[in-house]
Length: 279
Image (cartoon, rainbow, N blue to C red):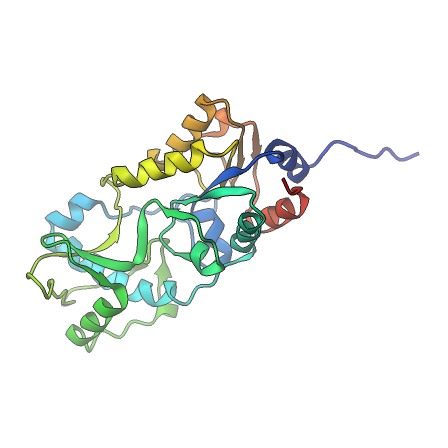
């Protein structure tokens, strides 16, 4: 007689932990890999050294190099589409099961999928800010200015490697022209939080309030390497809230979690959404 393993699988385990109250979701780059946006720290990701805020503001060569790469990477980012993981979270939100989504991503795919209550912890890729007068421009407008300033810069998206923050890997960016702010002549920067830069305090406070309003935390596609994400796991754990982590590879929050699932997010979240009962 064959023996049947009746132990619950990871989806069923996660559903049992999360059922019974609204919960908060924290997402990272891993949720967007199935949309064609690579992550930084997944087990199959190549080594990357993201530009820091200090490099961007302090070195003209770094800044020119970044804008040239961003000019190419932005074309790719604006064509990406939400995947099954994003759509599964929208379904959970519409059923009233979520307090909301806190995302470390800048790709706006949660909003594109239809999510309403999203905190973009690190900003988003489609805005540019002047560091002097604080005027905010759309990235589409700045794209037109970059095109006008660099008519001979003809690098195609398919010819380069794209990074998660609308960056592209280019070897030669000498001669690329970065126009200044058209209002005051100041320095333009994508309106996202760089490494070495702090998330605005009011944004963190809103995210904490969202977490505190729920009964549990689900982490999807984040290695929790940086404190901007790990602090939510620590806060949930300190408050006695269950924590479920779904990510390819280990995370810094594993020891604080009630359940850790080494898996991709798209299929898992779709199955989880189908397994969770309504409140």
